[in-house]
Structures are given as structure tokens and as C-alpha cells.
Length: 245
Ligand code: BTN
Image (cartoon, rainbow, N blue to C red; front, side):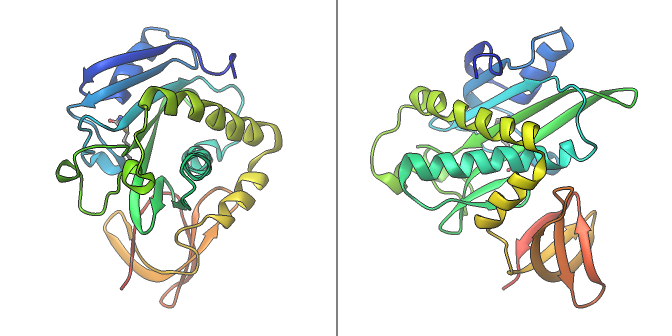
């Protein structure tokens, strides 16, 4: 763990911890450098959507410079972090947390956390990855989207964000280490137990193409499997998923 995470930089306010870490990475920062911000003014989620990051949440990004990874590494990474976050939230709070493919942690059908992985290549070699996570801890509910939930409101107890992060980082390390040592099989199996979308009727938006079907776990590359009555069984590496009502 000491070898994996290095310096933690605590910031009062930043545009986005993703940009902050990316800048450090380009300046040669070490793998494992972490930036945590109390507030982000221009935080983002997947597909360049904005992510609300008011005071009271945990927002951090960290740098990885992976060496010799399998081709599906970038597909698995958000799932590894999501698994770690779901497991830790459950341990910390006692509430059941589920992982919504590929990057959200859900509790009671509400979004508690989001994950974003952004990568940089040098030619065709993966140079570094910046992984970011936002967890709604105790933010003003009016500043959050309607489907969001604060952890504080689930456990009815105050949460020290710094202490929370210090307990959480070993979980992140643990699941990453499992993945690096044993490959994706273990991760896939663990995910299947906390899969928010499992066997649910979903709407998949893949670059503007809309498909309806039943979510059926992930394939060996971490891609979402959809059973679609229109086109059969398909896998998606990147798509927006919503529940069909
Ligand atoms: C999503 O839900 O699509 C992902 C949200 C990721 C938000 C985190 S907060 C820390 C880091 N900085 C950002 O600008 N985004 C990520």
C-alpha cells in the first residue's frame, strides 16, 4: 500500500482534480500521487458531463503509470474502483451498495458515487491513467442532482472526510492488487454479486444509438452484456445506461 499511493495533496478549491493530476503527470509526477479537493468548480463525469462538487463531498483523483497491462485493462479499471468503493461503503456504513456499470455506486436506487478514468497514450503505449472519484458525503442536497444521495444521510452520523479517505485507500489498493495478481476473473465474480443492473430492463445509449434489452453482467473484457430482443446478444465498452420503466 505504501508503495502504491504516494503523496496526498489537499486542495481547498480546484477546477477539477482530474486536470490537476493530469498536469502533474505531464510534469513527471510519480505513480500514486493523489489530489483531494474540498470543492471543484468545473468537475466532470463521463461523456464530458458536468459533475457537481460542492463542499461536503469527497473528490479525489490519482495517477497511475501502469507497466505491461492486458489489453482490457482500461475496461476493467473503473469496475475495479467501483468494486472497491461499493465494498468500502458497505463496510463503513452497513448499507448495501451496488455497482452500476461501469462507474457508479448506487444505494437504494440513488447515486452515491461516480468514477472517471482518463488515459494518456504515447504512441500506442499507455503512458498514464488519471482515475477520479466523487462521493457524496454530506453536501447540501439542493446542490446535488435529484437522483443523488449523501452517505451522511444513510448512517445519520458525522463523517470526517480525511479519516474516510484514509480508510478507503487500502480498499482501492486491495482490489487493484487482486486484479493485477489474478486478472479479471476474480473482479468479474465479485462484481456479479453487487451488479445493480443485473437482469434489469435497460436502455442503452451508445453514441446516440438507442437499444432496449436486459442487462446480463459483463464479458471477459469488462464490457456490459445486453440481451436485446431486436439484435440479440451484444457487448458495450462505452455507453450510457438507464433503467427502462
Ligand atoms: C460520473 O459520474 O460520470 C463520474 C464522476 C466523477 C467525478 C470525480 S470527482 C473527482 C474527479 N474530478 C473530476 O472532475 N471528476 C472526478
